[in-house]
Amino acid sequence: MKWAACWALVAGFILCGCGGVQYVDNAESKEYSSLGIDYHDLEKAASDNTKSLLESGYVRSLAGLSKPKVLAISDVINDTMQHFSTQELTRKITRDMRNSGKFILTMAFAGSGGSKDKMLESVRGARGDDEVNQYGVPEKGNIIAPELSLSGKIIQRNTKVKSKQRVDYFFLLTLTDLKSGLVVWDNEINIIKVGKNTSAW
Image (cartoon, rainbow, N blue to C red; front, side, top):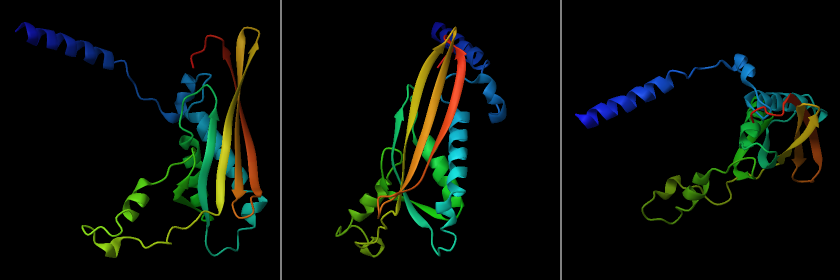
């Protein structure tokens, strides 16, 4: 009986604690912003960079192509005090790039800003395995190499202004032609935040 009473008490505390949680609509969540990088910052950086790319002279020059360019995500360095995966940014951008019909993403090649699909190597490792129907195993030479590479860097700069703190974030992205090594597009999006020195990160 004592154990049952203890468990009932613990369950009551848990339920009371959960009662303070609420869902926040994305549009209203700016009210809870901090000096750190949040959902809205990544959305803006991705949206503005994608708009710059799709309106660039390079993309306009692809208008007559019969098939999309194969794109790989290279290294995207998070040089900030914030801990987040850079894939939150790159996958938003590459999703819109694919939706434009001018690009297609490969999962066979990737740097720190993306991820390789491990199943590619796993399936090819089944070549010659008597337990695997070889009819469905891909032959050598079928993986398509990327033509373009998306790379970048996110930089943070903190400045104290009187009793407040200013934080500048720089989202730098570059699209490189892998055959020639030439940069075909690059862009920089800046996000500036100001808050109290005690503002939570």
